[in-house]
Amino acid sequence: MILAVFAAVLFRPAGVSADETQLKPFPGNATQWNGFVRHDFEVDGKSVLVVSPDQPAEGNPWVWHGEFFGHKPAPDIELLRKGFHVVYLRVPNMLGSPQAVTHWDRLYEELTQTYGLSKKVSLVGLSRGGLYCYNWAAKNPEKVACIYGDAPVCDFKSWPGGQRAGKGSPKDWGLVLSQYGFDSDAEANQYDGNPVDSLESLAKANVPLLHVFGDADEVVPWRENTGILADRYRALGGSIELIQKPGVGHHPHSLEDPKPIVDFIIRHASSNPPPIIKKQKLDPVDEIAIALEPSRKIAYKMVAKDGKDGSKGQRELFLHLFEPSGEANEGETDDHGRSCFVVIHGGGWSGGEPRRMYPFASHFAEKGMVGISVQYRLLDARQGATVFDSVSDVRSALRFIKEHHQELGIDPDRITVSGGSAGGHLAAATAMFSDINAEGDLLQTNPTPHSLVLLFPVIDTSSEGYGQKKIGDDWERLSPLHRVTSGLPPTLIFHGSGDRVTPYVGASGFYEKMKQSGNVCELETHQGGRHGYLMFDRSLFLQTLARMEEFFTEHHLLSSRE
Image (cartoon, rainbow, N blue to C red; front, side, top):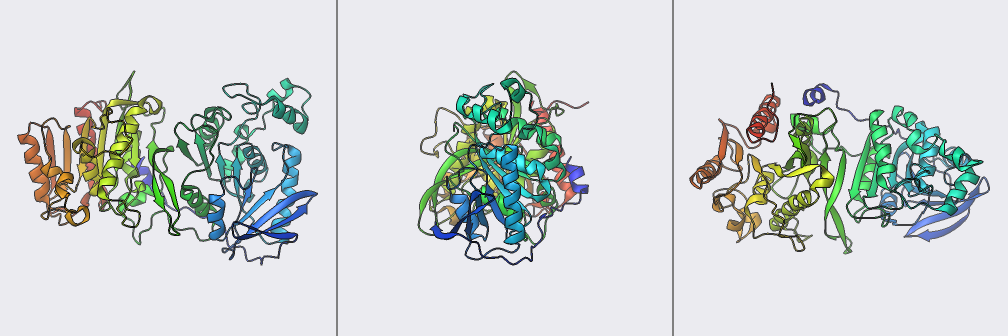
């Protein structure tokens, strides 16, 4: 797969051309909605509202709500700031029926032909709103930029039918029968036009999907809605991103920090979307990463967030999961689950993102392990975030993985943690800094992994190494070189002898201390290699993966190959 991605043409078209049509003023009563102008009028005898941005973005992009406009409005407000219009057609209690789709057809024609909105729209389906969005999109795939579903109903037999795990709603089931024109329950149960059944046209049109859901939802159970839809859409070649909220029911919708939702819509609906990786020149690992997406993201922790406007709030930190396919069988499995490869990005604790390490997580998922790339708080004086927070976050992440190992299909005793540069430092932190933990963590859960793989790591935070100025006077508490004890996990280190960022002498000194303390440690030295050397050369990257495979096989994390 890694080689195939290298050979691929790594280009993702925006799919949305600039619409030169000038906007025509909207009719109806004008009011204010969260600081923006809202117009209320009628189309096809139904109430319509349009909220306009102060300055429309190029191409006049817009989002269209299936239901529950105004609930959890943070994504809409941010999109309005970015130049999107926000639209809602009031056809309640029609549950995405054919007549509701007809009303949608007429509004779409009016808004695009008369008022100049983009020919491609982003659809937002909260709960039952998913029926409206998907049923209209299946009929009009060429008109859809993307779909964001939030705990969406994808099969009315699940809700309101309640025929499996969900509670159901007899009153709303009656609406299904009347609105769709079914004569009986049996006829409704034979219907094959639900969103889970009508995905082929969307996949052929390459419509990207995002679903946010709580995994404890008893109203619209995710496994029989989002889960089925995601499996089928991927089997058809479609792209869907999943964001999982552990322990959350049907409410609350959205995310505490709407950024992942807003970024998704902007990426797929803007005429000039920002690059996936913000670099002038991509290295070979970037070129792989740009084409990869995790099977799902899981919010493992909530942290404080201070807005630029002085507002206070919270935001999620995510685990980015790459799960093995049914064919990936090299990873050793037993009744306790698969082995797991956790990887942490670098960036001097102040930059970088989980995507940087996607190629590592994806590669080992192909080998049968569960691959996870970790998001953590970055060093940020305005937010009050320190390197100690980065450390506590990754230790929280390992605790979360172990505490949820059954749901993740992971053997908690066969977890390897890896990382590059500052990420290598944080990988070591999961095993070494037992005195640094997040408030509220279950301390009885030991985050120490089975083994470590450290890539050109920050290993010495003294003035002779890297990081003392960023950490401060307490640097020694966060210096792996100065915290070596017996009983640490088997460790494999990759380091270049020409590294001037995290000097090689620190890695060799750590190796010697590990051996002296009776720990298993191996040091792979690349003569003359600069900092990050294996990320900048395709052959060295592949050699590193191969050597890691050997290490994992030796330590019973991968099956030996014939």
